Length: 301
Image (cartoon, rainbow, N blue to C red; front, side, top):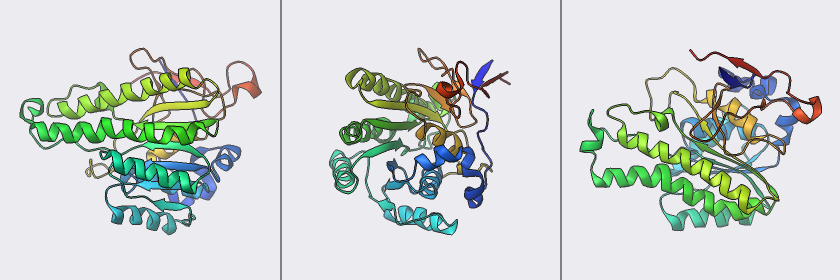
């Protein structure tokens, strides 16, 4: 039996965002307007989809990625569906370079009075090393994978945090993969990197809760599933499938989940010592009293 949030939309047409708001209630959608978000890996795939959706909601979105042209394509994608683009700011940045991460963080601090959200989405795929990846991946390939998938998110989270806690509230997402608890032959190094990212996200959440108890910090890990991205060009699913669940977390009111794991389809996951979050992400338990309406459990297939 798995806990899940109902109302999550995985097949919402981004062109119709005004009608469906990616499944968010109107109040939650409106709460994103004017807030500042930093999004890494913002030029393609899930990053582009999330940036476009946040722009549609009226958020300020700082886009980081290694390729400036890809970031420009994200702005063009937002314009194509009628989302405002004037608050999309491209900050080319390699998350494996501490000086570039620090520079991007300083640029954001100079432009936004408070950074509310961070989405650690930048990642590298498994190098093509065959079925014996752990045996054949070179040290250089290993270092590049870990630098982007683990060290980079840590650098970005640490750089963003001071500007986030200053506002008294923050939302942070680490975009992981089911590879983080898989042992598929041929993907060993990638599996290891995502397992480390899972622990990084949950550990970062616990440390922030301990160090800054006065801050409404909601730091969580989300599994995007498969979609047509640069890493998985054979999929028929849209990267926008991640948007609804991600926005449910990023727009959550005070007192929400911290250090928890979620899937794009609405499932609340348990992982290691982290139990599944017991309440719906789209209902306000304080208003309803007790167990929020709409929360349901369904059998794992």
